[in-house]
Image (spheres, rainbow, N blue to C red):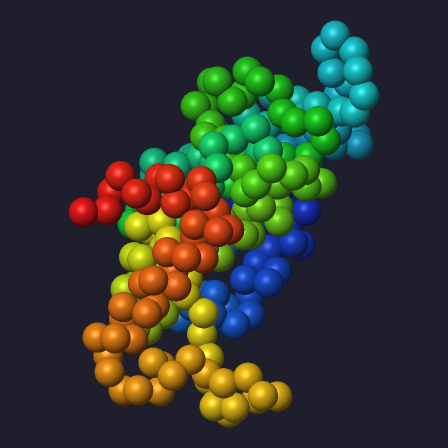
Length: 233
Ligand code: ADE
């Protein structure tokens, strides 16, 4: 069975977008994952297919209507069995590698892509929507975030990447950043590849890489390093 990606959006043309090329694109062609878009506008009201209204209590911007959002979600849920319902949102839990792995193990996901000032809170409660953020910055909508999350999930699906990378994957899941990589030429503009990497001693190479991973994580991401320490034997 293919991994099912459903996108509820005002901009169906944004999908599969970058996921139609390269690794995800080939996986799409191979049927490893399926991309289905659902136009929120189809559930809009009246002649103009309105989907939003002014915020209750006043304020700037527009809010997606509960009745419109619910109709779109119900429409998708009627054709899918028990897929997790995610809403990209800067308010959400931070998306990370562990979440990508968890979602890749499942049958797929529904991404409800937000616009405007958000969606009526009652919908989030009624459908137990899981809000997920890709970082502490504000995008103009959930679509690029849904694409980013999908990319992280799709590359983990069986058959998408060679098995060679899976151990690296685990190392990031353990919480460390990647060690530096080099390739030929051995000497470039007076800079040499670290000697250990051309030594052929695989044990020493593994040790050097582990040390570099630790060093880089400590320096750049003290938050990850602090989380990593208690799990280290
Ligand atoms: N929508 C707007 N900003 C977002 C973010 N940082 N992450 C996920 N969805 C978003």
